[in-house]
Image (cartoon, helix red, strand yellow):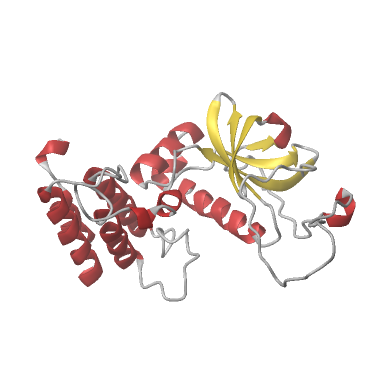
Length: 268
């Protein structure tokens, strides 16, 4: 895909320790010797007009690496995140992401809209980042999927959690996740809307890809609320609201009651 790609965050796994004479610690080999080809193929083609636009890899500009299989690119004047198929195991995940958005686009409220308006509704109503385009090797020539383009929405919770051990529950701590109660309320509203749309049984857990011990979306959302509460310097009122809302979600999964608890006149 890209020869001699520069890795910004290498992952090193030591399988054994060898004691050898000299100071040589690595060796170089030609690309064709060390390359690991992607044997699984994913083609994006459908009769008629595809639900999600296609674009070729050559249309992406101004690359900036974000880490692992996600890069930041410019496309059609938009700031985008490109999730690439880097290994065979990525094919199924990318295919699931595409099909999940296609299901949402089939909803009556979105089906009658232009793709631009449908994407806005998807983002604001369901809190789901739309897929702006499916990236293929060469449009109209080779429709092998290389990855998907999504709006760049800033840093995610996974990157913030990397420094989670540095945070404390103390409101005097200067380090803060910068997450608001209103943002958590909007996230909960989006998860509720996904469950009501019946497009996916597990909207929060990567559209159906969940861990074996995953209970349900409501319980996971309650756990997330607690995690954010312990790492945020909210005032006493917001702390109590988030804690009560988390307990409701974990106890009975009542989204309506949880949203009422998180509601506040300051947001109106």
